[in-house]
Length: 167
Image 1: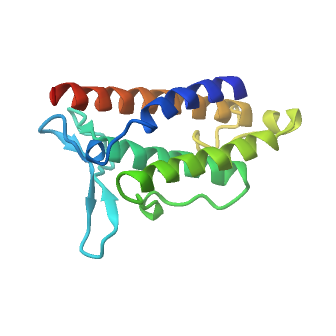
Image 2 (image 1 turned 135 degrees about the vertical axis):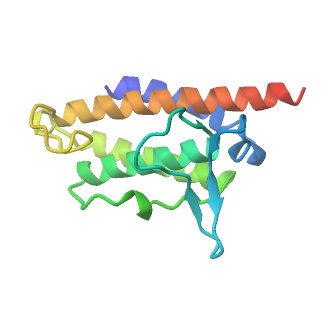
Image 3 (image 1 turned 90 degrees about the vertical axis):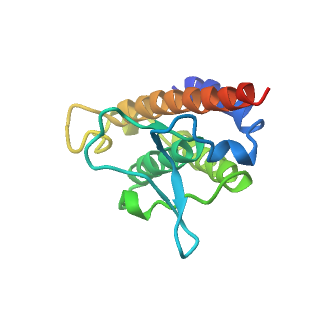
C-alpha cells in the first residue's frame, strides 16, 4: 500500500509542480463548485448535504480543499485524535499555500503510515465507514490511496483543460 501511495503521490507532484495560481479558481463549466472568500478573508467551499443532480464540476481549489478535508479526517483517525468537522477545514488559498498544505498532509500521512505495525493495520477503522466493524485500518489506508488517485486525476485533467483552452 505504501508503494501504491508513493506512486500516486509522484503523479500528483507532476501536476502540483505545474499548477499556476489561476488554475485553482478556474471554472471549467457554468455549473461549478469552488471555494469562495468570505468577508473575513477565509475561504469556504460550496457544499450541499445531499449531492446535487447533476453533480457540479469542481474547481482545482475545491478539489484541493476536499483532499484536505477527507485526508485530514483520515489522519485524525489514524492518530487517535477527535476528527475535525467539515466546516473546520479551511482552505489556505490558491497557489503556493494550497500546494504547501497538500504537501504537509503527505508528510503527516507518511509518518502515520511508517508508524503502523501489522497489528495496527488489522484494527477496526472508524473512518470512512462510520462504525462498520468489517473494515480495518488497512482498508482505510487503501481507501486513502483510491480517493487520492481519483482526486489527482481530476486535478490533472482540470489543469490540462485550462492549459489547452488558453492555446
